[in-house]
Figure 1: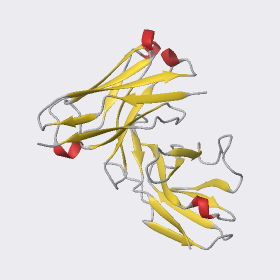
Figure 2: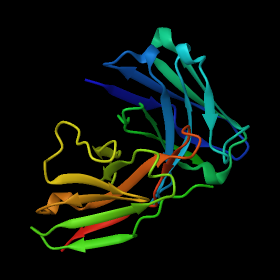
Figure 3: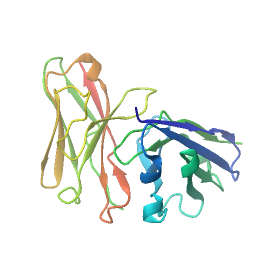
Amino acid sequence: EVQLVESGGGLVQPGGSLKLSCAASGFTFSGSAIHWVRQCSGKGLEWVGRIRSKGNNYATAYAASVQGRFTISRDDSDNTAYLQMNSLKTEDTAVYYCATPDRTWGQGTLVTVSS
Amino acid sequence: SYELTQPPSVSVSPGQTARITCSGDQLPRQYAYWYQQKPGQAPVLVIYKDTERPSGIPERFSGSSSGTTVALTISGVQAEDEADYYCQSLDSSGVCWVFGGGTKLTVL
């Protein structure tokens, strides 16, 4: 069974940093891209970015709203993807999900940016 | 930036048919995906590549495509189908996921 488990969420002050993890199982992680999507409370879904596989040079792409502040990486030996978030703003407060290209999603982890 | 447009809400009585539309200029060139999201839960894929249904999704869920509009149809709506539904596709670069604003389906 394909499974994604996010972790690392929590409360952080504006301007701070946080690193989220996405642990994968049940599929060939190394050959798969991983996407990150976020959802503010009571609001819609927003794509954050993605990282492709080694075969695609670990190419990354980001939404304009996070470009330059967020970085996606991966460790294929540990079947884990990461979302490093820097210079956080209150508007980054959301549940963050990771997802596979075939649209399997994790359960999400909550990030709250507040002083 | 590229947008997908959905109606904010759709209401139907149990047993009726619900149709939720999603419009976008790139839809003739990019596949659409549909998600169901219930409160406090992660989105669940119900339709992929415009018309395909994942295993485990009831047959009453179907997808269609015509030009710049795609649609999710739920035949014989049940109370358990009450949820938010999101369409998703790709922008013109084929890289970035784009989501519609979501449609709240109410079963009267």
